[in-house]
Image 1 (cartoon, helix red, strand yellow):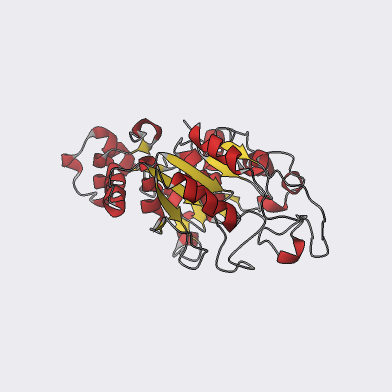
Image 2 (cartoon, rainbow, N blue to C red):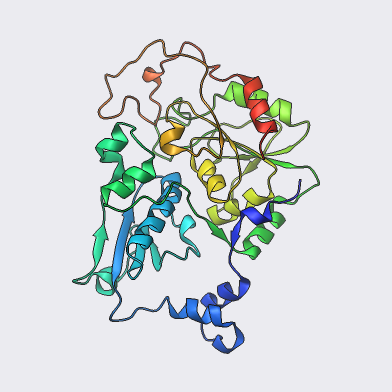
Length: 336
């Protein structure tokens, strides 16, 4: 299948080279001069500090909020402090970005009388806890920012895609991307029933699609492995750049589905605990479990019914066969 180049937001090489070599003004075009001039700190600059913590996928979602902030405050420069900076590169709405705990001279550079600071946690808002609307809308409402839609943004440069192609070494077979497990290093277990795809179902899907696709399994080295796949574990920017090279995608409620949405790549997303209306995208083909709760242990629950870490004692089903394999196969086959 041909790469979906028209779906990927890229930046011209001239802009990238200028950012890396600002002394080469005479060698680049006028647009790059404007962009480079815009990253300088001036005494009369007005700033918005946008602070977001949490997982990788949440930081991708945050780019939709940043777009809305920029529309409300077009003259202010947005400085983003984030736990994952991969989504920030080349974003035209972001003046500068910093990872948490790497903010040297931040106060001196940005904290002034007219600086606006947006540092609140959307997960603690009533609208989000009650699942009333998409998380990006709850996020905007929390800051009294007009909502500008849920669509996140990721920008790649052509060299990133070229290097990604070199890393995966295409062999002529169409590529399928698969993510079955998410979560960070402090997760309760390497498996979370709340959002991970049961390994039994994942292997059945691989066995079916391995006849037609080269399957690249997005996972950390300590997460459950599958047979007949290749592990895909790259730095995040390089990983993003693999997505446009793929023909089909099967994901869970984790960062990969957000990357695909940002790049305009329809995917099949399997939901166990969270709701696609809150964390997902209607452009994807979203599949819910066909099993029903038979128990609900809420002894450990505070504001959420279940923990995303997936405490084993809270598993509410009597089966691990939560999805109809044929429904998933049909959904993958009709991906655009």
